[in-house]
Length: 321
Image 1 (cartoon, helix red, strand yellow):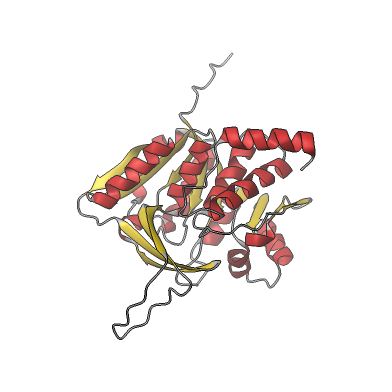
Image 2 (spheres, one colour; image 1 turned 120 degrees about the vertical axis):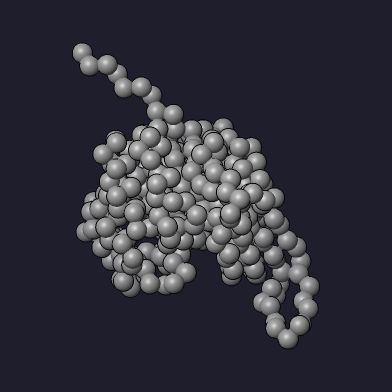
């Protein structure tokens, strides 16, 4: 009998788009040049980065989460490492690089919409050689977000996903928005190596070049993706395995800025999927996580724990809610 392979250190790993978010909220946050000063209602400074927020939610949901990234040797960089560790993420592979300035995202939040200004800095600083086979082999699953913002990794992502596959990992991909709005790059080479594709609805339409969500999802399945999960904001979410579809609804929330809601949605889905739960349960957990974060300020404050999710699932079984 062959020896049992040693257990992997992590359930899920990701590549950190390391940055800090400055969230400015108000009824009118549209700047006016000409030295015009406007007053706003509030602001929040919090760790940002889609993958960083994802990793924190994954850890809070009981997954052993590891992250690889680079930060500057500055206050923002130290804030990021502290917040990751505080949430339970293994940040030992976050490199402090004195030649970098830590990334900054400025989100102008108005009503249920926001505009974002981003200084990349450390956000896109991971080098391809940082992604070793040893790092990949330490996990069960690889999740990649911010595909278009990780400019140094992007040309190498097909190779990285292939190596992950060869090492026995499952994979998921959430591209997030393309600031250049080209929506192509080498994404078509990564798609066939992806087990779960997790865009939002607008990203799905632009990447696929289709005018309806149904056609977009069919296009993705045609590219070889087994499972497509689409976030639809206030309309909930939709999942498809090419044969069956599942939907979930969300309750409208107020008082939050929706920052990080999609990233926590991704972590919620994988928290169920990696536990082997049925896909409708995975989707419900994802929607609950996204909704909870959407009603809070910043990407971390509303993130539920697995205990909270378990209590909700128990009530659902009793009440049928």
